[in-house]
Image (spheres, rainbow, N blue to C red):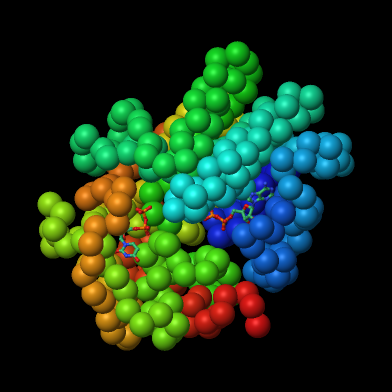
Length: 337
Ligand code: NAD
Ligand code: UDP
């Protein structure tokens, strides 16, 4: 099956592309490399033994995207491409709305013209806002607090409208919890620009000595040790979830929504401890004020994905930490030499 993977050079997209190639799919990657590196394409080939087709194109450019649809018989689309930094989205809302919304609309315009029916969308647990009930089920109420999150919820709403108007489509909305970890080879992984916002790349940068200590954002939450609790999920489990979602779409399910998480929450201090055990590195930390907009706890109920997709996360926190560490310690400067 020919799968168009937007954002396939990025963190989750690169791991998923390998999984798709290994499962026998043809992969066509479109990425403008605004948050990734061309070398990832070579590494995908090295790891999977197969070359994805690659177009360096901005998806918001409809004319250029049309060439991709003309040149390939696309069966399904997995749409990872997006700007994704919460803080940056507050400072640059126009860029976020423009990039994330227009890219999705361009894809749907071309899907209609070229009769492509299957679409998988990268959503996020951020659409649950501050959850009323834990663990979080897919039918929980939705609310967002920043422009990045709003682009995700707006696109989800758009997808529901688009499906309502055209029931021949098959759409999977995948709500990721907190992706960490890296490929077992240690040659692809997460490479954030500048000082990381997310906790795992921050911890690994402390471990390689590029940052002096971790700031733990608050220890007065109502959690096991006062620090924030999240449902960390290995990027390889996420990648596998996308292959399962494509299989599901081939059964013509209409529009479906799944949580991709482990169902288990870990506090910041528990994560730091697991990382130290996996890496043998002490992570110095300082407790600071809460980060504005953060919530105390967020973890999934992933049983719907297990029942309907036959998907369940298989990696635990220790392996997530080991694999994040292998990537960072082997590539202290990421993809840059
Ligand atoms: P990433 O930044 O590593 O990958 C996104 C890729 O999309 C990058 O390679 C970037 O160059 C590309 N891109 C962005 N805009 C583009 C455009 N207009 N045209 C072409 N390419 C474009 O991010 P990621 O962590 O792999 O995230 C993938 C998706 O998953 C995103 O939609 C993100 O919002 C979502 N998500 C990520 C997380 C997370 O913590 N990493 C959590 C929940 C949801
Ligand atoms: N966190 C932290 N220090 C950091 C980054 C994050 O203490 O430098 C905490 C944050 O408050 C939250 C958890 O780690 O409780 C996960 O944060 P992250 O930004 O990775 O993901 P989020 O769940 O906010 O999307």
